[in-house]
Length: 598
Image (tube, rainbow, N blue to C red):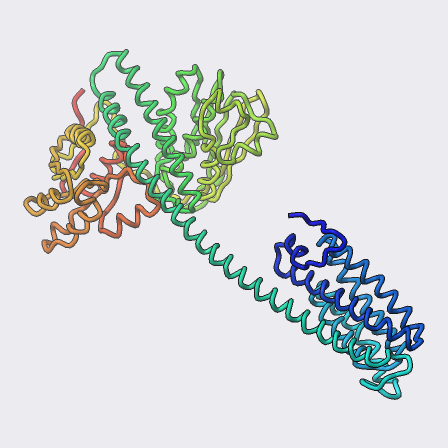
């Protein structure tokens, strides 16, 4: 839109086309109206003053006509001058009021009152409220002075220095018209502005609705994709771990370790993306369960030692002796994620030398303990400028980082947000080429000594032969995996393919626990669990149900609890985690840990 208009342009519409704001359009319209009517009034008053020989009035009219013509030219040239022109018009109004009161009419007449009214209204329409108050006071002041000290007040009577009739009356009528039209224009603009805001609110509500639908669609998509990705990955990791526990040659062992390492990396990558989505939606929360930090950190490092050795790096683990046989209340999954991401980064960006993790007790008071976690490396380091970027999502230290080292740029962003849930924050000390140190402090509540059953080794095996297990799983590979895992624990589970078969099986036989897949054809795990919980036989309705799911729905836990399931385990799952859950739920069946003679 062209904002500069020709000098002879008299079209208000063309002037307003360049201004999108309704209230600003109203101000421009009011200024335009005042200028046009002022020019008309000047044109009417000019011959009257000339024929009456009122030289002072004549001079004032000619001066004002010149001023109004120049102002109109600037207004029509560009809308940016409107604010300044509005201010000048108020000054002109004050000049007319004061000159009418003390120079020409020297009294209060109707024209003076009209000008004062226009000053007050225009001040609030055209400038801010502070200046409007000042200008209103200056407009009322001469009238107030004459009311207090003047001998008489004439509203209609013609004064010798006043404009002659009928020109005076015409000016008075035009003043009234100016006031009416200015009010009409502002009222019209105000209504239009309100209508626009209402329309904008409707658009905003629609946009919010569409955004919520998009968020839900994204959550549904991620949940579906998680299920589709995790289901085959569960089989890959599970079968690989089973093979690693079987007799094999050295070459097979090496190959299986590579497969397992790659699968676990893929699993962590999927988890990072899905957890980041949860954090974006503020849906992520922490568990609070007893955890042996000494054992947890050693297990994490044991799993990453192969990655370090593959690059010829030394992985050093130093844990404060006071943490031995001591349990803390925390979320082991999220803590593992934090340490795994920091250790993985340290190994990734270190070409030679070592990577170290250290846990030091800073303070131990009554039933709480504060621990400093530190991960150091001898890697490429990070300069000061890059340190401000690395904790942002999808950001890496330089554009070559992804090309040379891979990764999504989510690891450190997730670490920072997860530590926020723990009430902590990650700090970094580093310089380019000199390695890095990432450290943070976390305070934990103590849970007492670790009384859990020790983890298995090559000479230990779990025996849950007395536990009657029903597996509800539609994926044949996952069923085969569960069959192999449970058979290693001397258990022969019963398998069903869908919810309907599971319900029939529960009605026919007695079971101690049900492993229930969530996503199944015909009748899914939620509906199946709900039907089981509604059975009239109390013993069958109260069978413990553990959900097996690859879903990452933000309200997964609430959904599972709402249908009466007791617990859940995510795919891909660790067989030790599955055993612990089975052991806790089925302890009444006297499952024991037995030693296999070596």
